[in-house]
Length: 321
Image 1 (cartoon, one colour):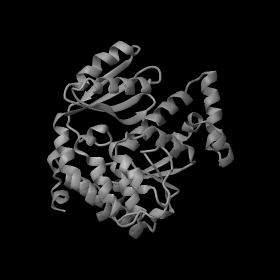
Image 2: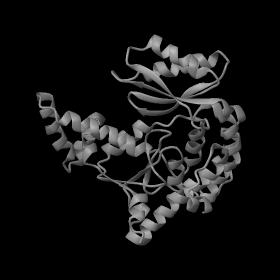
Image 3: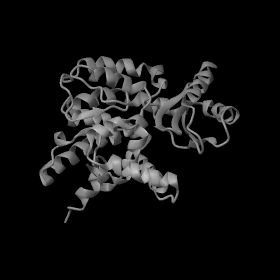
């Protein structure tokens, strides 16, 4: 509470406190939404969450208590921080054609196989962008390999901050997935279907049942985030309003913003192609669930500019005297 009041940002060394704070703030925001607006979390059509957001969605759905899911994460947080010492982040993106993700995966495996460190995809952000995390000099090995094997327009950009290598095989070096899984075996809860349904960034689909949340959470630790699959499924669901929960949400709002701008640009084109897209846009915006299911995921993306978005944090702050 003191950190929030004094607006002190967390550092990498305080990763455990950051984890706890983010989930606590998300739960508090949902409680305020219910108290002041009469809107309950379980009245939503579906839920999505990037990285820690998926864990928070399980808490909000009362599949687990906040304390229950936090204990395994806090238990391994110091090891995650220690692994971050030599981990660097890169974004591989294409300014032209769709990125050959399988080829990127192969490159990462080849570099890892040389034994100088592990590098892997941590998130599939879009059809032309992936986020990679690599130890020591593996990112330096990936850069020339990308230039040599891919068409012009495919690049690698490095993020200079240090990041815990969650969602990659690097965490296996300290047995983090197995240790967290053993703790989750004894965590109370995990025997109810989430309500609303959660589209998982682990699987890219709404796979949660009354018994498999522990299995998905175990994969969550060392598997890449399938963000683009989740975004496509969300838009195709016919959702008309998205409420972004948590402190300063950015990944999902930014992704939707990019899609929206791209769609608007194409719809504005004064060409036969633009005319066709405008006609298709009116179709996908109509209230025809059967047609939405029949359309391809790419066609459903035309709905994006017409989805309303609310940043819950901003909405709540606006109510303050």
